[in-house]
Length: 359
Image (cartoon, rainbow, N blue to C red; front, side, top):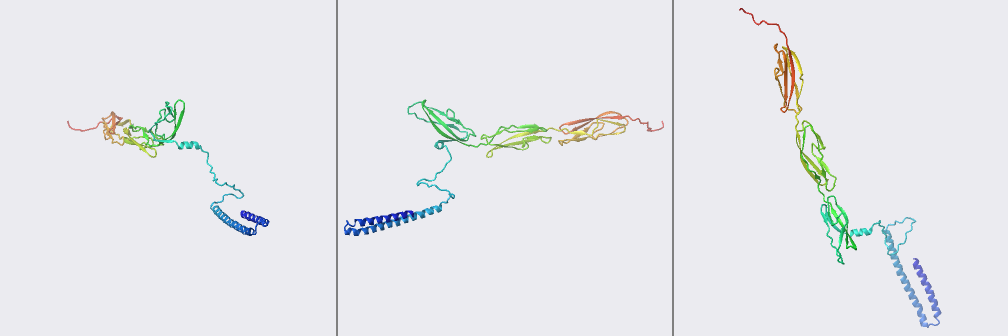
């Protein structure tokens, strides 16, 4: 609107100036030409007004378009804050973190060679020398002086290798990106030999399990060695197949071995027998041993004379003397022998009449 006012004022000033000039020059101008001047001036003013109207329409359209853009773009300027005018053609500036752009460009442009773990890396380098000089090569680690590297499990990753070519005077370097892809393999269980033990022994077992990828390994052992050790007892005799399982969470390895526990016979226990026993003639001797067997084997008990296997001996008046009685207990594998010394004291008895008759 301010621009429009300035234009109108300028037109009025121009009009007054032209009218004055026409009046001044009317004396030297033919009447016909003087009469035609006002008509030209009117046409010119009409033309200027028309241009003003067109410009006014253009300005209105521009103001409407700006208002629509302002509606679509949310205002983020705080109250009292003055926005700096942005010159035409200048866009928003994006602030990036500080990066080694040159290095990134170089890395992105590197030739990439891909291998898998446990494969042999062997670079074949071809270089031309314009002077036909002899060229020697050197390689940065992990390559050796021949440009080779036998990868292993656990070497997965990205490596930037520098190759230097020299003619003895000048050198040229080239970087190559070497990518070693991971290859998962199952854990490795060291060889397992069979184990032997005897009843009553404590068996301890700790397998050696490793992972070529250096992954964390979980080791599981089957019973009766699931805890890594086992205290056997008199009932443990037998053969056991033990399974060792190693897992890295993805792959598993399994091995088995045998555990042989030999039977150890537990001798029967004999009690309730005196070492010595004293009786008198005419008394009855009783030997009743108490026998138990931890293995629960069948037991056989034998008692020597004069008592006998039934464990009873009724002495007579002629049996005075000392007797050693042997008690033998057997579980079919081993025997236990006990001895009892029996003393039979003499008892004097009066004579007895057996018969009286005529001679």
